[in-house]
Length: 228
Image (cartoon, rainbow, N blue to C red):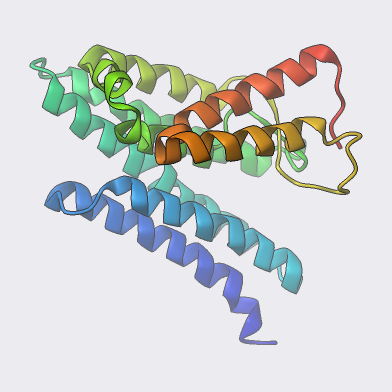
């Protein structure tokens, strides 16, 4: 058991390593940084799952998780956006707008750590969801990708999604306490639509999935659908 209790933190460190490799890939221009963000998301999911399964949750694990997330889901997507804007723009200072992603991601994670009301739901877009949205922009269908990869559109995305990280938006968490339809309507609907979008557009579907996640969360709240 003494070795098993280190598994969650080892998975968290793997998340951090993915973030570091992703940053390196931006300098070497060898591998799309999205792949490292996606791998980091997998490790981020399983570190919490392993901690609950093994019943070894700890304060240091929570802090380590946030520190790893700042790198993988804050700094890495910020630098990716900085690179994309810089390639497309002739304006010297416009790419620095992307740094807002790292700043607001750190702010979002700090708020999450001290907020006890975000165990079953989220307030603001989670940092992994934000990173997934940004990382998948290069995989959009060609016509849409050309439109999105304008320096001003990218800068606008950086600003809007930075604000969404800390906005008072109630979003459901993909945590099932039961598998009944009642109370899980948004989750089942989201998963079904996500599978269909992935089948149709593959990685290019991820930005649409994140937008649908935000939309269905807000729609469910406005319709009075209670999640559990």
